[in-house]
Image 1 (cartoon, one colour):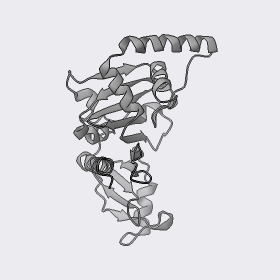
Image 2 (cartoon, one colour; image 1 turned 180 degrees about the horizontal axis):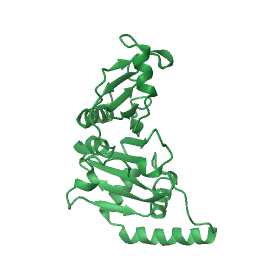
Image 3 (cartoon, one colour; image 1 turned 45 degrees about the vertical axis):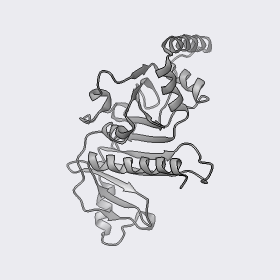
Image 4 (cartoon, rainbow, N blue to C red; image 1 turned 90 degrees about the horizontal axis):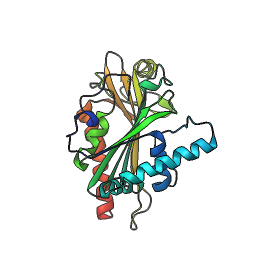
Length: 263
């Protein structure tokens, strides 16, 4: 949910009617996570109860649990299992840099891939950035997972400034002037945030996990830039929806290959 123009690639708006989806209240989703994720909400989601009484909260949780049990079927179990034990996770969090605490300008997205199944989750923002009006989950073909995540960010074209590198301490790298670098970072972004793509389970033949993260910034009257730290120096590059989808998809593919091949 954002206060900026929605992207025409929003999976929740364009998905086929037959696509399996689930809508949860905030308490229902919290109970789901308590039961399947040991109480941990998927990042970057937040939950703050509006119920002040402990007894009333306990009653609301019990009501939510009964509601979840009534909806349980094989598809529900597959969805909950994928959220609890995914192979790959993609996280997106966004806000308006000019007003970071304005709820309607925020974006909270969590996507998972487990084997041949993919799901995209989003938080419906409440009255503060810590509150929620509920959570939506939709099944997504794994080949379209990256596009679905990119499509839930605010609509933006590619930034037009030439790409540049950053040296130590966010100083400009070769080919970039101090003025260019400062002008980029001193311009308040209409939208900004972070993206993470990470391996969520260990492979017995490989140490550690594969993961990456990047920052995105939408400059007014210009477009979107991605700030990556995958090489010797961070890079700043203008990119559009298609290019952002390709970057996310490339990392998902690399992680899936790592898990499948053990290389």
